[in-house]
Image (cartoon, rainbow, N blue to C red; front, side, top):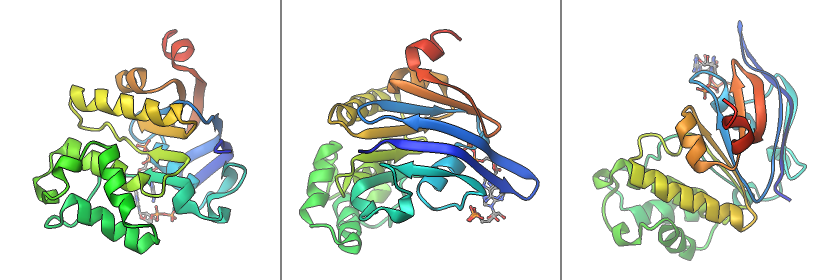
Length: 220
Ligand code: ADP
Ligand code: ADP
């Protein structure tokens, strides 16, 4: 399955312990928020999950395997780690087709992913003319190209207007309802209350609390 298990995960940068013996789980079929102030260690944790940063200790697994040991990681795990960037003169659809070609995915997946995020009408417009919300959606479309069962999104609601956040909520809830695992970070409590079913809160690299949004954020 697509369960994420983080166990004793630690990342030491010289004098700074960015992630400190962190343990939590993320269940399929739910939207899980990963909440903490800037500098808490969220991005470092997500990058360790994706094998982009090497842990100093502990493990992070997806469906029981480390990312590096997944048989077909791009089809199993989709991720956006920062505001989507694309060649500015390229159209949205071409951006996705280039990724499909590089990843060995069928070209039709580009059209399907654009449709999925509601960007089909802007398929042939150039990236440089996209609004921030459209750029975020294009990033999500790129993460969805491989039809992954696990989605990891770092601050996807950053800079979105209320309508964009409402769209994101519906989109993520649908993915979870299909049984996918959705892990989404934010430094804003208000975003987590809107977007997530469960929440994992960290501060200074350490776990503060994990539970449902109602039980954890309702009691703050
Ligand atoms: P968050 O995503 O919660 O804002 P980060 O994971 O980006 O937090 O950063 C956690 C801490 O680790 C911060 O103090 C940051 O400056 C530091 N940090 C992140 N990456 C590195 C790195 N490659 N080298 C040194 N320090 C880093
Ligand atoms: P690693 O692969 O060792 O986990 P990264 O590839 O994330 O590290 O970063 C490489 C280098 O970039 C780090 O050693 C650090 O010097 C610098 N760096 C990146 N992000 C940060 C940050 N947020 N704060 C301080 N230094 C950083």
